[in-house]
Amino acid sequence: MSEIFAAKELTKTFGHGKHVVEAVKQVSFSLQEREVVTIVGESGSGKSTLARMVLGLLPITSGQMTFQGQDVTHLKDRAAYWRDVQAVFQDPFSSFNQFFTVRRLLHRSLRLLHADVGRERLEESLQYVGLTGPDVLDRYPHQLSGGQRQRIMIARALMLRPKLLVADEATSMLDASLRVNILNVLTDLRDELGMTVLFITHDIGQACYVADRVLVMENGLMVEQGSTDDVIFNPQHEYTQRLLSDVPKLHQAS
Amino acid sequence: MKSMNFTTRFWISFSLVLATVLIGFVGPLIIKTSPDAVVGGLYDPPSGFGPLLLGTDNEGQSVLANLVYGTRTSLIVGLLAGTIASVIGLAIGIVAGYKGGVVDEILMGATNIALAIPGIVIIILLSIALDSRAIVPLGAVIGVTAWPWMARAVRAQATSVRTREHLDVARLSGARFWSILAWDLLPYLLSYVVMAFVLQVSGAILAEAALSLLGLGPSNAVSLGTMLYWAIAWGSVRTGAWWAFLPPTIMLTVLAFSLLLLQSSMDEVFNPRLRRGKAVKRRKPPSPRTPEEIEEVSPTAIGGSTLVQPPIGVSRGADS
Ligand SMILES: Nc1ncnc2c1ncn2[C@@H]1O[C@H](COP(=O)(O)OP(=O)(O)OP(=O)(O)O)[C@@H](O)[C@H]1O
Ligand SMILES: [Mg+2]
Picture 1 (cartoon, chains in turn cyan, orange):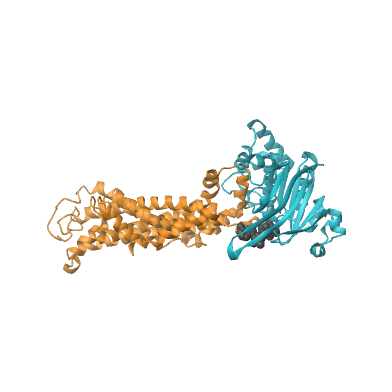
Picture 2: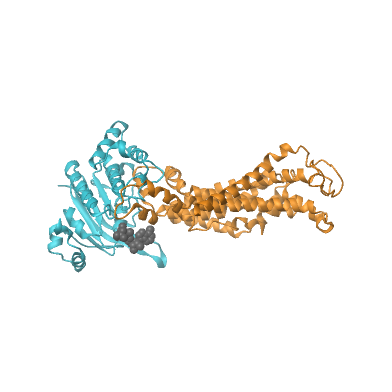
């Protein structure tokens, strides 16, 4: 396995003067190819901020990021980067432009690709998430269920065959059965397409269900990282122990 | 019951606005009398159904002809100024709201400065400096003093839409800045912008009337404000020539009132709760966390229109 992404001492501060918030403090980690890594932490611990920096959606205060050996900390044109690094977000309603049909949404992303591969990819990606084109393409977001919306968002990211997929709380607004379904889709895709997945959640149970490796964040700091087994059975940090003791035993039940 | 209410309100205000538009734009075609033609003596009382329906003014001209032409002037000035203010305000507000950070601070700083300068002073100075006081420059001057309110209101709306994840999705799809503004932000603001535009029009009509009352009205056309100016100057109130001052006053009131009413009834039409009521029926399988709940959490501009008070009265700043 080789390293696909590395972050070195990433820091993000919001505001200035009296109202400075240090959302992410000197976080370093790396992702290997074909790995599923989760970031866990309570609400407000800086997970989404970190994800948005990794995606290049948020300017970085200090630190460095490399993707496939290249420095991607301050890219001027990110179109090429976004061909390789894609995301699925938390809220399956606000991820959609409510004035666009599914077709229009997907076609917009297809512009990052060459025209000839587009149509094929579209159908194929919808199949991966268990949907068929004619059923959903001409619908507006409010005509779809929450689960369908989230699967369409995953399909959108998959169309581009990203090397790295960032899923920020992608399952937190879904009910339990759909959640497991989506988690399985994500891990299957890793196996079939060789993606690397960075899965972000506040639920350590879900984190352990999917991940090869777990990174734990508290208050903007990365307090622990290690293989899933190490983190569950031998948590080093007091915060991780607390997170673990709080979960209903989802990972054991399933 | 509630939907009854909003439709009646909407239709009443819509009919009123339509009526004023018809009076202003079709009226001059029907009433062939020129507003500058002398058809009688000083303050002839109303008689018959011709040009003397509303009597004559201080120069012996038909009040009716003046009224329809004056309404037209008011509407032209209002629409022109409203459009100019809305376009400038929308452009500045949407860029500031979407960009945030330094760009936002600079643009809003400029807006606040523009807001602090009393509009009426600028209008008076500009209309004196401009020399020509034709209705088009007059509308333009009113428009460029009214945009700051629009900019602030649009920015507040845009900031609330900005937190929606679909903007991130658009960026991840490689969409460019202008494409995102036009397709991902503007549609969410549109209903709000339309409502604010209606307010701008009504504010501009009143601003024009205020200017004309000060004797700074358009020189190349009759306006409702100049009618009032002459009516007061020639003592129609004192002599009891009500037909000289009452019609323009009523017309102005109806214009401003119907636009305000239209705006407030639009607010109800755009209210997401009403739309949601319809959308729910179409939705099939309910998941534990229903889509409705999520919809409520996500701020749409349309829902947000009730969060930020539209600048009622504020856009009329120029008339005070
Ligand atoms: N644009 C912003 N301006 C100011 N502060 C911000 C901004 N975005 C995030 N923060 C702050 O940064 C901190 C981390 O936020 P972040 O959204 O990354 O948390 P999170 O771990 O994703 O939480 P959650 O699980 O609730 O999504 C919070 O304290 C938040 O208030
Ligand atoms: Mg988050």
